[in-house]
Length: 370
Image 1 (tube, helix red, strand yellow):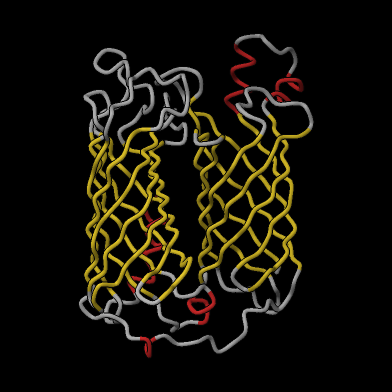
Image 2 (cartoon, one colour; image 1 turned 180 degrees about the vertical axis):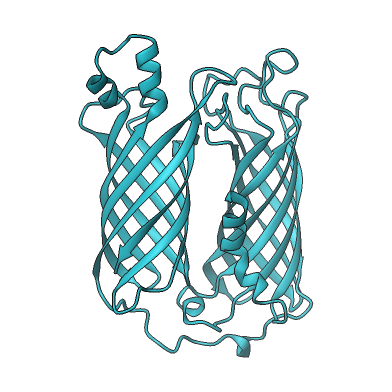
């Protein structure tokens, strides 16, 4: 389910674009290091981590209004291999869809911010006997999240060179502990070949303004995640999440969410009951509950959306909160409007973190009234 949702999300423009111009192939080298983001990591970070990335890309050029409103983003699928740099960590093999959001264009130079998410297989994981120092990753199969800032130079119409900064995160979202995660930061340099490049005349302007039809709206959703708690190889417990937010539409491709979010963590309830730290069912339920306020910025690409969220905990209850501030990255797909209404249902995948340590990966659905 996770694989299907993520791959469909950002790769669907590629499927629709098999016979169009602007399809390219990129080979990129990545060289960097593992960022030790917590003192709880027991391994010594290796001096160098390096790898290769092959990308299949499609440059949009305005065949739909949202492409022009977003200044013609680039969609693609990356396949990546990284030598993490030590025997304890091994190698990472991954694949993920991504979107390049344009930052600037000036003559032969272009700048992009890239965001992508998918799956990765790490050859080494925590093992009490065979690999006890690798407490960063408890499973071979993981989520990979990639963030890039890169600048492209077009040498010829069919060739360009690219370089920039890269950040890659590997985590299973606490589905299997330990899971402090691995963060690789570094530089990238490569080249892209576009056998049938786009000409300036191929780019089509939008036929409608991107001014929203309505400024205000509402959004609500329910999500479900599973986490392994406290014991390596122990049971996984559900985490129930619900949210209600008000919307403010900046444009048809960007809107602000401000709202309340509630979580109930069954693992914390069970832990407090077994350890007799909290007396009474009501007190244990409060300990397993979290209430948060948040703001989020949502970027729309047709029926697909990427949502970046930050929030904080309120109410003074809830146990085992790592930090007072959390962040989320969500991928959503919106269904068509219900007849004679301004309501749209959506399904989504959400990664929640505290700083750069993942807490869970959740699947869910919701509805917006916009």
